[in-house]
Each structure stands twice: as structure tokens, then as C-alpha cells.
Length: 259
Image (cartoon, rainbow, N blue to C red):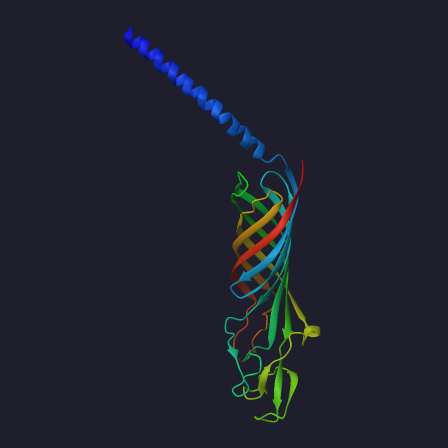
């Protein structure tokens, strides 16, 4: 009888504790439900900086939601592309001249127009958390080469005057080069080379606001072109038509929604 009384007493205490716990949890649960998103996002736009193992650039991406955590994307990216054998050089006498790369006859830039999909694998459960996702993109790419122009001193050191000329390694030696000319020289001589690209990305969206996007991404990118992209003069080094790079993106933007 005593044990039965103790059992009922313990049961009443447990039931009381459970009720108190449920009452205490109710406001918290209500707050979580109030904090839970009541919006359905439809579109997003973000852009930012790109840094990769052979250059840097900028990107812009548009997205349309196609379900929970699924986004169709359209992107535009423009980046510079360096040759792995580039080494900065300076005039041996005149230190006022700008640095240049001996043997580099063209600067290269790649423009990519892509379509892809983004999937959120770990959604953001509350404001201030991090959403983890991955995405891929592919599409056409065009490499543009711009001739390198240098300031050439005449007749010999010590120079009497300096002229801006298109760099020709066969006639311009290290003692002839005063320094690099302005970046706009050769802009009207851009030469395109068509190709395609494929990109695979892991991204981390960490904004503390629902409508605001702040994303850090890391990924691999593969570019292929129909002919080698001439950056260095052929007598200095071989040029590639295939490029595999590791990159990071920092993006900022907003997403639109309907309630």
C-alpha cells in the first residue's frame, strides 16, 4: 500500500513537472514559430568579387526559386587569366618605370555566361545561422587577349626619349624597356577565342537578415577553348587552351519574396 502510494505520488510529481515544462516551452515554441520564415522567396540577385589561382575578377548571378532550397541560376563573370610563368621585371637603371612581364605579349581575360542550379543541403534555421549549399554552372566562355604595350627608350641607356610601342620580344630587350605603358593601350585590338566552362561550387550564406544575401563560396572551374590562349611569346613558354582553377567568391545581394 505504501509502495502504491509512493508510485502515485511520484507519478503526480512527474506529471506536474511535465505540465510545467510544457507551459514553459509554449512561449519559446511560439517565439520560434514567430521567427520562422512565413515568406516564399521567388527571385534573388547577387554579385561580388572573384579570386582564383591565376587571377581575379567580378561576377553577377540571378536566381529563380523552383521549390524549397532549389534555385535556377544565370550568371555572368569576367576574370583575368595569368600565365603561371609570369615574373615581374624592372628597368635595370630607371626605377621610375612601371613593372612589366618579360616575354608576355598579351593580357588575357575570360568572360563566362552560365546557367546552373543551386541546392541547399543545410538550410538556415534561424536568422544569424549559416546555410550550406552547392551549385553547378556551365555555358559558353570567351577569352579576350589584349596586346601588351610598353614604354621603349631610345636610342640606348641613357635614353633621350621614350615611345609607347606594342611589345615585340624579338626586338625589345631588357635594356630597351623603360616600363609598362597605360592599361588602355591595345583595348581596340582585343582578339576573342570561343570556348566553354564548367563550374562546381560549395557556398555558405551567412546573412543575419532574410532578404539580404552574404555568401562566401569556394569551388573548381574548368575552361576549354578551341585554340591556345597566347599570353607568353611562343619562344618563352607554351600557352594553354585548357584551364583548371580553384577560386573563392565573396557575394552580396538580395532576394525577393511574396508573403
